[in-house]
Every structure is written in C-alpha cells, then in structure tokens.
Image 1: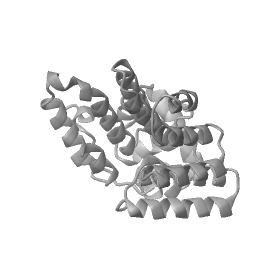
Image 2: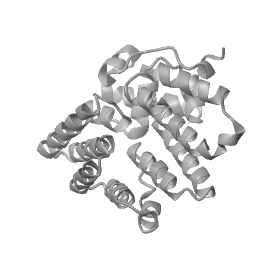
Image 3: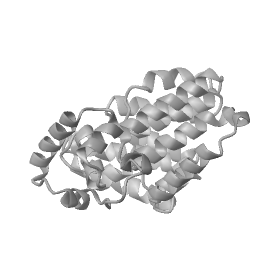
Image 4: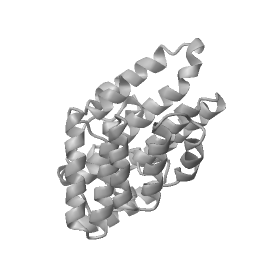
Length: 257
C-alpha cells in the first residue's frame, strides 16, 4: 500500500504509512524487512531523492539475499534500475539463471539495456515486461528509452517512446515514477542536477538537501549553480514549474520537529 500511495502522487500519505509501519513493526515479521526497506526506497525516490532510493533498494536486496529470498533480490535490484542505477545488470543476469519464471530474465534484459544506454533494447524490454503483466515497469523502461533517445538527439524515436510510456502509465491510473517524471519533462540536466533541483523545488533548503543525500552543502550549491545556469533561473518556484512538482512541507525528520 505504501508504494501505491507514493506512485499515485500521495507522498504525504506514503510517509505517514511508513511511519505507521515503523511504529507497529513486530519482531516476528522480520522476514518482511526487505519489503519494508523497498517500500521506503519507493517513497524516497518518488519524493525526489532518487539516489537515496537506489541505496535503499540495494539495502533491501542485501537483506533479501541474506535470507535466501532470491526473488526479492531480483525485485529490489530491478527497482534500483528503474530509478536509474546502471550497476545492477551483471547481478541480475546471474540471477536470471537462478530464479524460476519469466520475470528475472525480463528485468535482467531491462537492466542490461539501461547499462548499455540502448534505447531500442529498452523498448524491447518494455514490451517483454508488459507481456508478463508488469505494466508500470514497462512504462519505466519506455520512459528511460525516451530519455536516452532524446539525449542523443533522436527526437522522433524519443517522442514515440515517451508516448508509449505515457500510455502505459495511463493503464496504471496515471501512476508516476522517477523515470516517468523525467520523460514527461525532459531538461538539459544531469541526473544529479535534476535530483537536487527537484528537492529544491519541493521546498527543501540546501542544508536539508545535503542531509537527505548525505553530501556537503557546498556540493548542493555547486549543482544548483550549474543547473540554474542551464535553466536560466535561480527561482525555486520556477524550478517547481519546470519539473511539475508542488512545494510541500518536508517530512518530520527534515523539519527537526
């Protein structure tokens, strides 16, 4: 439910659901820890901090691996790939031969296409994911294909991939993910610049962004400076308009309450 709230756009509700899970966590349900960490990864990434979402997805994978839950490892590492992590292709390729069913090979192909920055292969992966019923993952793969094509100046292919991503997302009641958000509003920013601008647009201060991403304030300032030069503005409300996000009160942990 927590992930569903996040991808539906109810990030506040997702944060509240996470807090409720933490409050009522039972030691006898420790086997669910990978799922809880992965839910946190989704909320974190949808809330603008994709790199921290990747870290949490890897944490979920490590927990699942330690329990021998290889299917959960596949799911967690694929989540990292959906957030833009290009480092998981090798591990997923190995798992594709260990985990039964069509999902592991499909997500391994997705991760390999992402690592190779191959837009056509990403679209093929999108089709494979759609065929096995993972429509939102298929939308993410198509969105990543769109971003890759557009970055290389392949506008026709990029717009076609973006249209596919939008149509697939529509089948999921308009769900949003980091990949879909990036495809919907392409900007001339690096992944890190976009992440930091996104957090700034949500109303976080430079210090709060630094704490969220575990970097220095100077690093945040540097990325914002370069992003502002590319976007032609230093106004955070204009950042929000460019990204299509709405400023909001950050989670309690960021407010120091």
